Image (cartoon, rainbow, N blue to C red):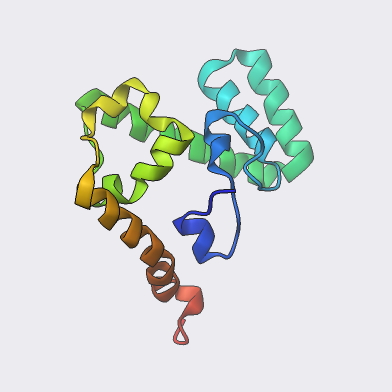
Length: 147
């Protein structure tokens, strides 16, 4: 399984291939969350209802409402970014290059808006990615003694 920044900072192992519909991502209800997200953005009313009911059975109504909110917000942000042609900023592009390539995200048409990461930037991105869990743990309020 691939480990990434946010999961590393929480000592959780996840598989980001779930983003492309492969497996459950290693998280509770992952398959149902993926099915709900897919149905919401590309299914009809029956598909959405069925996926939502399955998700409620697995994770409960509160998590289902949270998932719906995340899906709606993500869809909004993606549409704005795609509509304006916004590329990934340089640091995010560098840090996420290997993951995007491995998972296949760069196959989407909108990836053309983001420059390819090569050479020293790719190496620097790998180094920065390894440092990010430490930075996030340091910045996390739950880890600060004053919080």
